[in-house]
Image (cartoon, rainbow over all chains, first blue to last red):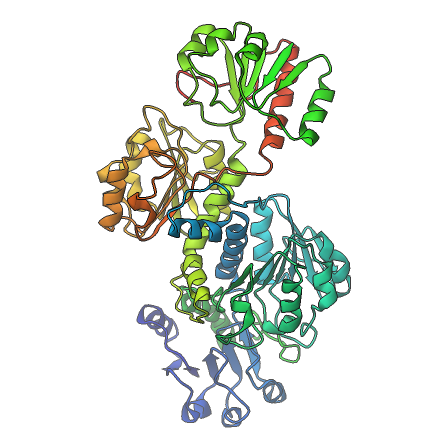
Length: 314
Length: 314
């Protein structure tokens, strides 16, 4: 069996993997080549190098392990037609992303941006506009692996968590659940609205003018899912109208965000350059998910962890 | 019975208190007057207005309720000699302080100060020097009400907590405990060193050169207790020598910190102007502690919550 990585892990991670599976031919390259793709039984990729043009050469390919969460750039229909199994590293982002989300919330609540500015002026002032996170209510759009980890941490801070997904079906670390249909009615309760939703047809422009009008004027709105969630013009209008208090964005309709984009300079907006999931331990964790799946695969088992339904996009 | 407040709570907090204890004569003033002090059976104060000069007039005083945590400015010997009971609001700061401490830690770990600077330049860059809080080790000097709340939250983030107090006796939410004597040997294990120690003879200059040399070069050192913990010249030397990675200070040897003080501008130092305990809910919480104690007091019971030992200073 031949496994083709289109990225190369550090030696301290790669060498143990190779040693653990001596019967496998591993190929590591830092880009995708047609030649190697033709020979690969299994492809391990970040998901951005496979397309409708090159997948036709992958005649032997049976399993794609995607070392990322998003698969928007993959040739979904061709993969479905060919019956190729796709699994990903869902959940791998949960620790760095949940830490980033909590960092931003607490920084706002405890007035850290203000404090940093005071320090630049060497100015001792106690006029910090601080508030407490405890006893607030958070609405989490997409209470999956990442959203639930955010919920778990928020609950530790004494926050009430309300999860919101397509069907309203139960999710862990959520005190309450609503479906997308119940979203508008629930928004007025939330002090913090956090989206970690994936990009699907249903999540595209899920939030409209009425949703921002329904939010508390001092609500913190955070998009850490995908930029398709809201038309940025709608969001900018809501910010300019004072319909929300703070906005923290890790994702945008177009990335990188253009240097002249109004979101950079609007008051009470934090631009995070899509780095919330970044972690020095990323590849290590990917391989921790890959190895048990590979063991199963070699035994002929197909119930791998995180098998994706590409027709749904997650 | 006459209860003298040297501050005036908001009407929505004051009125219910007065209504709840109709048999008490309440006096609210926004400063201390000798005349009222002479008549008071109980004094409710922030602890900064009573001194060796005016306490002699407080002939009837039996109980002082201090609506703060520190009693450094109170005439300890005179109070002890007179046998006056002193109780305080220990623990009242735990929520805002723990939230502030977690905010600062997460902001550093997730590179928020860097991100804010990038945003000012409208510069999209993913070169954030981020790390994760999970799996790190925190040493908490003073695992009392506040320190334990910090420990509880850190444990939720997957951090190992080591408490350190005078005797090394067990404290909640600490995975491990050491005494002051064991401090030097424990410091090399800690990624984060947090002090919330009160000001006592034993905590004055508890941390010396050797302690900073023993810390990890990338450790985050946080003083949220009292400025007496370390000679600031020793601390500045340690920072300049690169013996620690980040420093976050909420307390100082002299407050306010002078505008020309080097701590304002040293790299990787965050100056918090002693605001970490601030909360809009402070007086509300003080009265929640005061009311049950007052009920007990009126029944002749003396086992009030948070009775202080002024000879020890806490």
